[in-house]
Image (cartoon, rainbow, N blue to C red; front, side, top):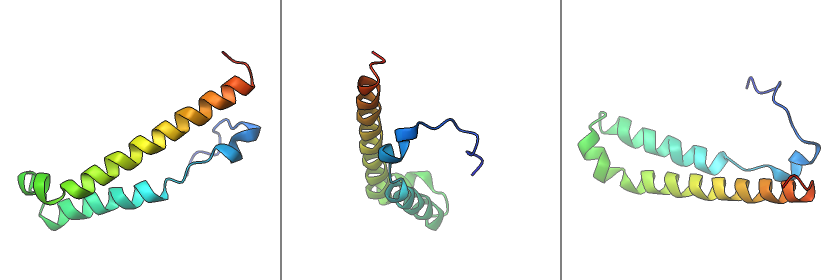
Length: 79
């Protein structure tokens, strides 16, 4: 938490993003590294599938957020 003082827009409920998927992928990446005893060299190949999935998820999430923010700003004629 700790985000209670964050400024929210009235319309923000419609612009919510499900971070759950990426969180799960991130945890899988960390678990993979832990299971290998934090061996970075081994993790770079053995955990690559987890790293790539997490990176792709975050990229899609960020693009969706940018698009939604641009649409919101256009509606408000901010630019």
